[in-house]
Length: 324
Image (cartoon, rainbow, N blue to C red; front, side):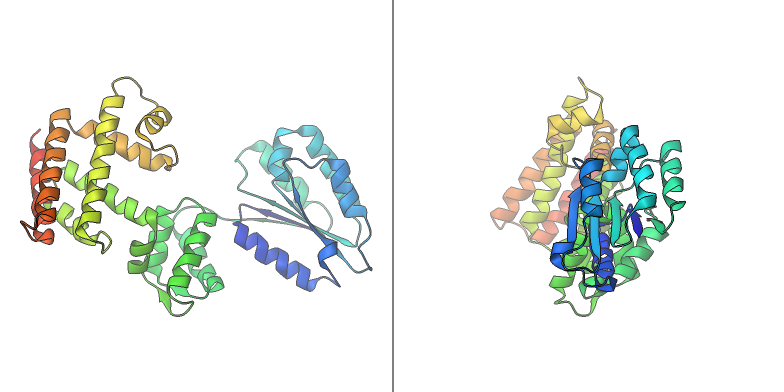
Protein backbone atom coordinates (compact mmCIF):
# COMPACT_ATOMS: atom_id res chain seq x y z
CA UNK A 1 0.00 0.00 0.00
CA UNK A 2 1.18 3.49 -0.84
CA UNK A 3 -0.04 6.50 1.16
CA UNK A 4 0.92 10.02 0.00
CA UNK A 5 0.31 12.86 2.48
CA UNK A 6 0.95 16.27 0.92
CA UNK A 7 0.70 19.54 2.83
CA UNK A 8 -0.26 17.96 6.15
CA UNK A 9 1.20 19.03 9.49
CA UNK A 10 3.75 16.86 11.27
CA UNK A 11 1.20 16.00 13.93
CA UNK A 12 -1.34 14.87 11.35
CA UNK A 13 1.27 12.71 9.64
CA UNK A 14 2.29 11.16 12.96
CA UNK A 15 -1.35 10.40 13.79
CA UNK A 16 -1.83 8.80 10.37
CA UNK A 17 1.34 6.71 10.75
CA UNK A 18 0.21 5.56 14.21
CA UNK A 19 -3.15 4.52 12.79
CA UNK A 20 -1.52 2.60 9.94
CA UNK A 21 0.77 0.85 12.44
CA UNK A 22 -2.19 -0.16 14.59
CA UNK A 23 -3.98 -1.57 11.55
CA UNK A 24 -0.95 -3.51 10.30
CA UNK A 25 -0.30 -7.06 11.37
CA UNK A 26 2.48 -7.30 13.97
CA UNK A 27 4.27 -4.08 13.01
CA UNK A 28 6.99 -4.06 15.65
CA UNK A 29 9.48 -1.21 16.15
CA UNK A 30 12.05 -3.13 14.12
CA UNK A 31 9.61 -3.21 11.20
CA UNK A 32 8.97 0.56 11.24
CA UNK A 33 11.48 2.96 9.70
CA UNK A 34 11.50 6.73 9.01
CA UNK A 35 13.77 7.97 6.22
CA UNK A 36 14.95 11.42 5.16
CA UNK A 37 13.93 12.00 1.55
CA UNK A 38 16.50 14.76 1.16
CA UNK A 39 19.37 12.25 1.25
CA UNK A 40 17.90 8.81 0.51
CA UNK A 41 18.56 7.27 -2.92
CA UNK A 42 16.39 4.80 -4.79
CA UNK A 43 18.66 1.88 -4.08
CA UNK A 44 18.52 2.43 -0.30
CA UNK A 45 14.75 3.01 -0.38
CA UNK A 46 14.27 -0.19 -2.34
CA UNK A 47 16.34 -2.17 0.16
CA UNK A 48 14.24 -0.88 3.08
CA UNK A 49 10.96 -1.68 1.32
CA UNK A 50 11.96 -5.05 -0.11
CA UNK A 51 13.56 -6.48 3.04
CA UNK A 52 11.21 -8.94 4.70
CA UNK A 53 9.74 -7.89 8.06
CA UNK A 54 11.43 -9.15 11.22
CA UNK A 55 9.50 -12.17 12.56
CA UNK A 56 7.04 -11.88 9.70
CA UNK A 57 3.94 -9.68 9.58
CA UNK A 58 4.05 -6.25 7.92
CA UNK A 59 6.50 -3.41 7.43
CA UNK A 60 5.94 0.36 7.56
CA UNK A 61 8.33 2.72 5.76
CA UNK A 62 7.86 6.50 6.12
CA UNK A 63 9.80 8.85 3.84
CA UNK A 64 9.67 12.60 4.44
CA UNK A 65 10.33 15.26 1.75
CA UNK A 66 10.98 12.84 -1.11
CA UNK A 67 8.25 14.12 -3.44
CA UNK A 68 9.49 17.73 -3.32
CA UNK A 69 12.93 16.44 -4.23
CA UNK A 70 11.46 14.40 -7.09
CA UNK A 71 10.16 17.63 -8.62
CA UNK A 72 13.75 18.88 -8.85
CA UNK A 73 15.41 15.61 -9.90
CA UNK A 74 13.81 13.90 -12.89
CA UNK A 75 15.91 10.68 -12.67
CA UNK A 76 14.78 10.22 -9.06
CA UNK A 77 11.15 10.84 -10.01
CA UNK A 78 11.32 8.38 -12.90
CA UNK A 79 13.00 5.77 -10.69
CA UNK A 80 10.38 6.13 -7.95
CA UNK A 81 7.43 5.85 -10.36
CA UNK A 82 9.03 2.83 -12.01
CA UNK A 83 9.58 1.05 -8.67
CA UNK A 84 6.29 1.74 -6.87
CA UNK A 85 4.02 -0.55 -8.98
CA UNK A 86 6.09 -3.50 -7.75
CA UNK A 87 6.10 -2.52 -4.07
CA UNK A 88 5.99 -5.78 -2.01
CA UNK A 89 2.70 -6.67 -0.38
CA UNK A 90 4.32 -6.78 3.07
CA UNK A 91 5.30 -3.07 2.89
CA UNK A 92 3.20 0.02 3.53
CA UNK A 93 5.00 3.09 2.16
CA UNK A 94 4.10 6.57 3.40
CA UNK A 95 5.41 9.55 1.40
CA UNK A 96 4.93 12.71 3.47
CA UNK A 97 5.76 16.17 2.12
CA UNK A 98 4.92 19.79 2.87
CA UNK A 99 2.75 21.65 0.39
CA UNK A 100 4.22 21.17 -3.07
CA UNK A 101 4.50 24.17 -5.41
CA UNK A 102 1.66 24.64 -7.84
CA UNK A 103 2.50 23.86 -11.43
CA UNK A 104 2.38 21.41 -14.28
CA UNK A 105 5.08 19.15 -12.84
CA UNK A 106 3.35 18.82 -9.46
CA UNK A 107 0.04 18.02 -11.15
CA UNK A 108 1.72 15.39 -13.32
CA UNK A 109 3.44 13.80 -10.31
CA UNK A 110 0.30 13.60 -8.14
CA UNK A 111 -1.70 12.24 -11.10
CA UNK A 112 0.91 9.53 -11.70
CA UNK A 113 0.85 8.60 -8.01
CA UNK A 114 -2.95 8.39 -7.96
CA UNK A 115 -2.88 6.02 -10.93
CA UNK A 116 -0.64 3.54 -9.11
CA UNK A 117 -2.37 0.36 -7.83
CA UNK A 118 -3.07 0.52 -4.10
CA UNK A 119 -2.06 4.20 -3.84
CA UNK A 120 -3.97 7.06 -2.20
CA UNK A 121 -2.96 10.70 -2.43
CA UNK A 122 -4.25 13.04 0.29
CA UNK A 123 -3.56 16.72 -0.40
CA UNK A 124 -4.40 19.04 2.52
CA UNK A 125 -6.48 22.13 1.86
CA UNK A 126 -4.29 24.86 3.35
CA UNK A 127 -6.16 27.83 1.98
CA UNK A 128 -6.73 30.70 4.36
CA UNK A 129 -10.19 31.34 5.72
CA UNK A 130 -12.86 28.71 6.26
CA UNK A 131 -10.80 25.57 5.41
CA UNK A 132 -8.11 26.51 7.91
CA UNK A 133 -10.60 27.48 10.62
CA UNK A 134 -12.55 24.24 10.12
CA UNK A 135 -9.32 22.24 10.39
CA UNK A 136 -8.40 23.94 13.69
CA UNK A 137 -11.85 23.28 15.19
CA UNK A 138 -11.73 19.66 14.04
CA UNK A 139 -8.18 18.97 15.27
CA UNK A 140 -8.15 20.84 18.60
CA UNK A 141 -9.64 17.83 20.49
CA UNK A 142 -6.50 15.83 19.58
CA UNK A 143 -4.71 17.98 22.16
CA UNK A 144 -7.37 17.62 24.85
CA UNK A 145 -9.54 20.72 24.40
CA UNK A 146 -12.27 22.14 22.23
CA UNK A 147 -11.84 25.63 20.78
CA UNK A 148 -14.30 28.42 20.06
CA UNK A 149 -14.73 29.45 16.45
CA UNK A 150 -13.55 32.99 17.30
CA UNK A 151 -10.33 31.61 18.77
CA UNK A 152 -9.85 29.35 15.73
CA UNK A 153 -10.37 32.28 13.37
CA UNK A 154 -7.78 34.29 15.27
CA UNK A 155 -5.23 31.45 15.15
CA UNK A 156 -5.83 31.00 11.43
CA UNK A 157 -5.28 34.72 10.85
CA UNK A 158 -2.00 35.12 12.75
CA UNK A 159 -0.18 31.78 12.34
CA UNK A 160 1.65 30.87 9.11
CA UNK A 161 1.17 27.09 8.86
CA UNK A 162 -0.39 24.05 10.49
CA UNK A 163 2.79 22.91 12.23
CA UNK A 164 2.89 26.23 14.10
CA UNK A 165 -0.84 26.01 14.80
CA UNK A 166 -0.37 22.55 16.31
CA UNK A 167 2.42 23.81 18.57
CA UNK A 168 0.20 26.60 19.86
CA UNK A 169 -2.81 24.29 20.28
CA UNK A 170 -0.65 21.97 22.41
CA UNK A 171 0.44 24.93 24.57
CA UNK A 172 -3.10 26.30 24.88
CA UNK A 173 -4.41 22.86 25.83
CA UNK A 174 -1.81 22.50 28.58
CA UNK A 175 -2.78 25.96 29.86
CA UNK A 176 -6.35 24.68 30.05
CA UNK A 177 -5.18 21.47 31.78
CA UNK A 178 -6.52 19.55 28.77
CA UNK A 179 -10.11 20.32 29.75
CA UNK A 180 -12.73 22.80 28.66
CA UNK A 181 -12.60 25.13 25.68
CA UNK A 182 -9.83 27.38 24.37
CA UNK A 183 -11.12 30.94 24.15
CA UNK A 184 -10.03 33.92 22.11
CA UNK A 185 -8.74 35.51 25.34
CA UNK A 186 -6.45 32.50 25.83
CA UNK A 187 -5.06 33.02 22.31
CA UNK A 188 -4.44 36.72 22.97
CA UNK A 189 -2.67 35.88 26.20
CA UNK A 190 -0.44 32.98 25.15
CA UNK A 191 0.22 33.17 21.39
CA UNK A 192 3.13 35.53 20.57
CA UNK A 193 1.93 36.10 17.00
CA UNK A 194 -1.40 37.28 18.37
CA UNK A 195 0.32 39.95 20.44
CA UNK A 196 2.39 40.87 17.39
CA UNK A 197 -0.74 41.15 15.26
CA UNK A 198 -2.40 43.40 17.85
CA UNK A 199 0.60 45.71 18.09
CA UNK A 200 0.79 46.02 14.29
CA UNK A 201 -2.90 46.90 14.15
CA UNK A 202 -2.36 49.38 16.98
CA UNK A 203 0.54 51.04 15.12
CA UNK A 204 -1.62 51.19 11.97
CA UNK A 205 -4.37 52.99 13.89
CA UNK A 206 -1.88 55.42 15.44
CA UNK A 207 -0.19 56.13 12.10
CA UNK A 208 -3.60 57.01 10.61
CA UNK A 209 -4.50 59.16 13.60
CA UNK A 210 -7.54 56.99 14.40
CA UNK A 211 -7.66 57.84 18.10
CA UNK A 212 -10.79 55.87 19.06
CA UNK A 213 -9.63 52.68 17.34
CA UNK A 214 -6.10 53.03 18.70
CA UNK A 215 -7.47 53.30 22.26
CA UNK A 216 -9.70 50.25 21.70
CA UNK A 217 -6.72 48.25 20.40
CA UNK A 218 -4.60 49.40 23.34
CA UNK A 219 -7.20 48.03 25.74
CA UNK A 220 -7.30 44.77 23.76
CA UNK A 221 -3.57 44.19 24.16
CA UNK A 222 -2.72 41.23 26.45
CA UNK A 223 -3.43 41.82 30.12
CA UNK A 224 0.18 42.47 31.10
CA UNK A 225 1.97 44.97 33.29
CA UNK A 226 1.81 48.53 31.88
CA UNK A 227 5.59 48.48 31.56
CA UNK A 228 5.37 45.46 29.27
CA UNK A 229 2.67 47.05 27.11
CA UNK A 230 4.73 50.21 26.89
CA UNK A 231 7.79 48.19 25.86
CA UNK A 232 5.73 46.59 23.05
CA UNK A 233 4.74 50.05 21.81
CA UNK A 234 8.31 51.35 22.10
CA UNK A 235 9.75 48.35 20.26
CA UNK A 236 7.29 48.71 17.38
CA UNK A 237 8.07 52.38 16.83
CA UNK A 238 11.77 51.69 17.20
CA UNK A 239 11.49 49.18 14.34
CA UNK A 240 9.55 51.73 12.29
CA UNK A 241 12.25 54.37 12.88
CA UNK A 242 15.02 51.94 11.87
CA UNK A 243 13.11 50.99 8.74
CA UNK A 244 12.61 54.67 7.92
CA UNK A 245 16.38 55.23 7.88
CA UNK A 246 17.11 51.99 6.01
CA UNK A 247 14.61 52.77 3.23
CA UNK A 248 16.89 55.58 2.04
CA UNK A 249 19.41 53.00 0.84
CA UNK A 250 17.57 49.68 0.32
CA UNK A 251 14.12 48.71 -0.91
CA UNK A 252 14.00 44.91 -0.77
CA UNK A 253 11.92 43.62 2.19
CA UNK A 254 14.63 41.00 2.88
CA UNK A 255 17.31 43.69 3.11
CA UNK A 256 15.11 45.81 5.36
CA UNK A 257 14.41 42.80 7.59
CA UNK A 258 18.13 42.09 7.89
CA UNK A 259 18.93 45.72 8.71
CA UNK A 260 16.27 46.18 11.42
CA UNK A 261 16.62 42.72 13.01
CA UNK A 262 13.49 41.02 11.68
CA UNK A 263 15.13 38.15 9.80
CA UNK A 264 12.99 35.57 11.63
CA UNK A 265 9.75 37.49 11.24
CA UNK A 266 7.16 36.42 8.64
CA UNK A 267 7.12 38.52 5.42
CA UNK A 268 3.78 40.14 6.32
CA UNK A 269 5.31 41.56 9.52
CA UNK A 270 8.24 43.06 7.60
CA UNK A 271 5.91 44.52 4.97
CA UNK A 272 3.76 46.17 7.62
CA UNK A 273 6.79 47.77 9.28
CA UNK A 274 7.87 49.13 5.88
CA UNK A 275 4.37 50.46 5.17
CA UNK A 276 4.22 52.15 8.58
CA UNK A 277 7.69 53.64 8.11
CA UNK A 278 6.55 55.30 4.90
CA UNK A 279 3.58 56.92 6.63
CA UNK A 280 5.67 58.79 9.22
CA UNK A 281 8.25 61.52 8.83
CA UNK A 282 11.52 61.31 10.77
CA UNK A 283 10.42 64.29 12.90
CA UNK A 284 7.14 62.57 13.78
CA UNK A 285 8.95 59.41 14.83
CA UNK A 286 11.38 61.43 16.96
CA UNK A 287 8.43 63.14 18.69
CA UNK A 288 6.74 59.78 19.24
CA UNK A 289 9.86 58.32 20.88
CA UNK A 290 10.17 61.37 23.12
CA UNK A 291 6.52 61.00 24.13
CA UNK A 292 7.03 57.29 24.94
CA UNK A 293 10.10 58.12 27.05
CA UNK A 294 8.16 60.74 29.05
CA UNK A 295 5.33 58.27 29.66
CA UNK A 296 7.80 55.62 30.81
CA UNK A 297 9.36 58.12 33.23
CA UNK A 298 5.96 59.15 34.60
CA UNK A 299 4.90 55.52 35.22
CA UNK A 300 8.17 54.51 36.86
CA UNK A 301 8.16 57.56 39.14
CA UNK A 302 4.49 56.93 40.04
CA UNK A 303 3.58 60.38 38.88
CA UNK A 304 0.53 59.10 37.03
CA UNK A 305 -1.79 56.13 37.10
CA UNK A 306 -0.36 53.64 34.53
CA UNK A 307 -3.68 53.08 32.70
CA UNK A 308 -4.27 56.81 32.42
CA UNK A 309 -0.68 57.37 31.29
CA UNK A 310 -1.07 54.83 28.48
CA UNK A 311 -4.38 56.37 27.35
CA UNK A 312 -2.81 59.83 27.27
CA UNK A 313 0.17 58.39 25.38
CA UNK A 314 -2.09 57.04 22.65
CA UNK A 315 -3.94 60.33 22.37
CA UNK A 316 -0.63 62.12 22.07
CA UNK A 317 0.74 59.72 19.44
CA UNK A 318 -2.40 60.05 17.33
CA UNK A 319 -2.12 63.83 17.57
CA UNK A 320 1.49 63.66 16.33
CA UNK A 321 0.47 61.33 13.48
CA UNK A 322 -2.27 63.76 12.41
CA UNK A 323 0.28 66.50 11.81
CA UNK A 324 0.84 65.74 8.12
